[in-house]
Image (spheres, rainbow, N blue to C red):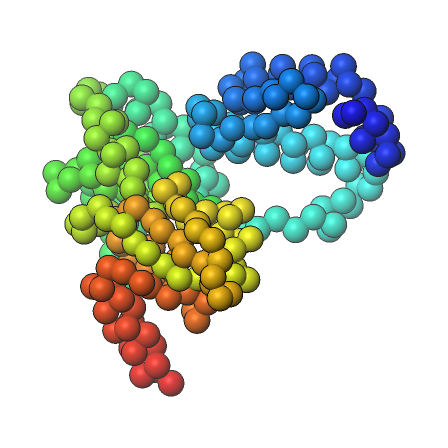
Length: 270
């Protein structure tokens, strides 16, 4: 069946190769179910480290594509438009040094340039716990004297890895961001957020969920209900506001009030 389907598309791909690829993906960590009728399903929830594996194979695929494209057209890059990235890891030594500090449980010291305070530079000492990518930028998450923080690597300079060994609070740091959209730590309690969304946005939200806790319910009168079980923060508000009139907050009421105030301030600009 697999071989026949690929032959119809003009692709030379045999059944034995297909099963070898299935075994290869399983050995790499993907959880793939077989219903014994020739149908295979990738179970994202049961695949450990799914996000890492997906990023890993995406980069492998792009590398293979570029190697192949060079033979087809030396000027192949004009046909591929990548999203403009920040210069977060232009200095890979910072990324590598922080990663080694995390593995060796060493504290780090650095200067950090603030976006929010007109380029203000502050000195920090941090116990680093993990590196996190968000919207094409890399961040180091760790603990300062004031608690758990995230710092953009593109704004880190004069990095020093200290000899001091610090206890890792990796699990605690992960818990802080587990129910958070983005990297802005929120003091709000974890809770259910109910949204009403125009049906035209459903394919986008299904293919790229706002958060792992997202649930979508059946359409009704051209709209569907979407729920999130998260902590409300700046990044989540920005993410939801971008949908404009396509999205309406149903509850809780205090988030509805926050949206009203924000939209009123926006209207006042016009």
